Amino acid sequence: MRHSTFRQLEVFDAIMRLGSFRKAAEYLFLTQPSVSMQMKKLTEAIGYPLFEQVGKKIFPTDVGRELHKTTREIFDDLARFDMTLADLKGLKRGSLSIAVVTTAKYFAPGLLGRFCERFPAIEASLKVCNRAHIIERLVANEDDFYILGQPPEEIEVDAEAFLDNPLVPVAPRDHPLASEKRVPLRRFAEEPFLLREPGSGTRVAVEQLFAEQGVKMRVRMELESNEAIKQAIMVHFGVSILSRHTIAMEVASGHLSVLDVEHLPIARSWYIVNRKGKSPSLVASAFRDYLREYTARPGAATA
Ligand code: PGA
Image (cartoon, rainbow, N blue to C red; front, side):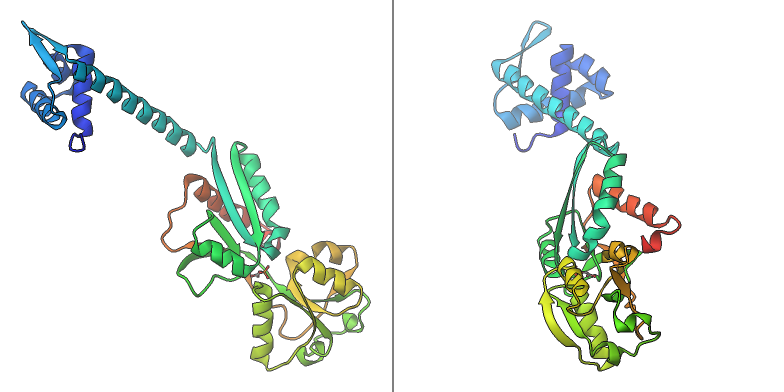
């Protein structure tokens, strides 16, 4: 059977339904010798006759009837697959798995939520981990897309920037430096610094800035999350450099302030990333198109 073609099965099905080689040939726009040739090959592949001729009429053998049942099942499955494909193309259903770095959790749920409102039957999942874990997931190809603050250099990826992500110096509202202008980085570095955990993209960017400027920071404590750092700043434990996305609420409510420090903010962007050459599913490419459309709208750059 391995060598029979889909075309042979199609011809066989037409003969079974229409009752003659001639009618099958007309139906499929083939010549009668070509229909006979296809059936000869199919019969050889199976090793048993599929039809017997009585007078001018042909009748299926037992093997022919069994093959017809199987052929119908194959054609029905294919018809179902066609419908599934049409559904997916219309994005009536499907699934989407996005994994984002911890800092992106401040805007990614909103983006995904609005996408799901547009396509309600899509099942979406959002994983949140630090940069090191996201890169592990990316290498293992576990999700449809990844959102990171910097595309990884250790593996080949397709990356597209879609939103600004400035990293800003943060202090308590009543910090003595809060009212000063253009504070030198060296002066800011004298304050006790609250640093993200190893593996954090924010930490990589912060360490890079201090190294480039030849300034040493006084690390008071390493904390695993932006939330923990914000709480520690509010109780005057120190200062930090965080993505502006993480502090919108605390700045608006007056609990935290953004300082004016030289060489800051660190200008970064959010990137949608995938392994180089991976072709996204229909749902995943709709999500990427949605991101492009969303971030092209006025005011999105700092959303
Ligand atoms: P992080 O990543 O949440 O792991 O710090 C943020 C970023 O890469 O900008």
